[in-house]
Image (tube, rainbow, N blue to C red):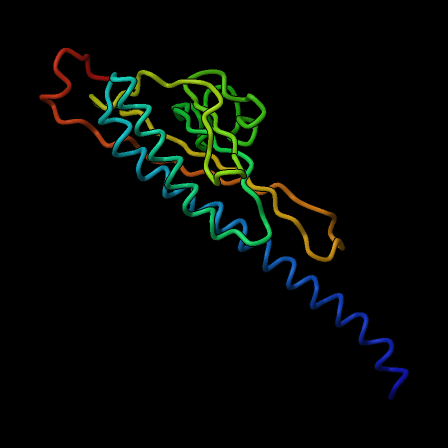
Length: 189
């Protein structure tokens, strides 16, 4: 009986560690994904309302980054890396920005109409590092969609699966259309 236990116990411990590791990884993914939804919800309503006012757009971006950061405070074994807010390429079937998939946006994959943020661990917020999207179209028939991509670094506890893994998630939402009286002078898209 003791011999059988010696064979089975290591297998059971490895299985248990694997279940724990994947459970924590799923939690990191779920939290990361939730942060993209929170930011995209704010962006869908506020970014289009900002129109062509750059200060209003910057305020909307700040609100989006604060919403994502608030959700990411729930992370246990992960640290945020960055966030990208972008105009979705209408030709893309998977919600990608102009120039590449959202994951590539962290490395500069966005070629236009995207704003990048990096995580500042010192104050627990995102800091804008570059890019712009100054002409969101919320008038007409073809309203733009906004995408939010967030990347986190999940650290494994046991080291059996490596030391860490990057987790990325994105959410795409259509900008809230503006009322007709606010679209005066614009051509329908």
